[in-house]
Image 1 (cartoon, one colour):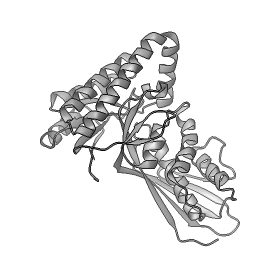
Image 2: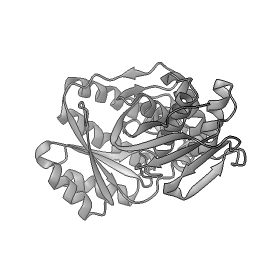
Image 3: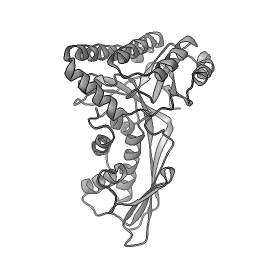
Length: 315
């Protein structure tokens, strides 16, 4: 086998609306964050070496044959090879990522998507988005236990999506440019644990949690309409209401609430946590004139970093 080095990337993501409720059949909206990326490079190795997976950022180098059965990188590679019905190539697959781990930005899904896409191309069998998405979803189960499927879908498609579990993916037509600031609490977001917590609480209090999920689902429908209409004022108010419901669900945290409040009081049109909660990131909808002011306020209140991304334009 001979091939030139193959390199593929996948973006990070944020959930704009609908986290947690999406696990129970409600809609959610997620968008790619191209400012952070996971990149996989496949290069030939000497014959007989098999496939080696290297993650310099994590100081890891493992052979596919000896990697643990639940190692996410190895699972992504094994599932790809099984899907293609081919043996492991003599190659080195190197992963680099600028996406913070356990921050709600889709690090695991993006890494898996980059691995699957690059390995398939290197083997001469490029996969379509549907096949990549299916494989990455299986890898997501390692990270999140019972994932909704939204992370793998948005990073694979690399476009804003309206997602309902078990239904065809819908791309969103964005009616105007919206600027989103992503504030990182610096605290790892244990998505697997927060999803399990909500599941336990829903089992204990089904009527209450189903009502919360229904309310969040209604907000998501309204949010899609606001995005398509290019209505930032309505979108901001819906973000605030979504955050209130997530607090009631029990998945926010003092750090997240502090950043959300800082964003609102410094001029954001709306703000909420994004992702699993209990840490990770929050997002704020801002106008061009308030980007710097809100960024300063978030930093002053403890945000470890702030990323600006735009919905509706290629950044």
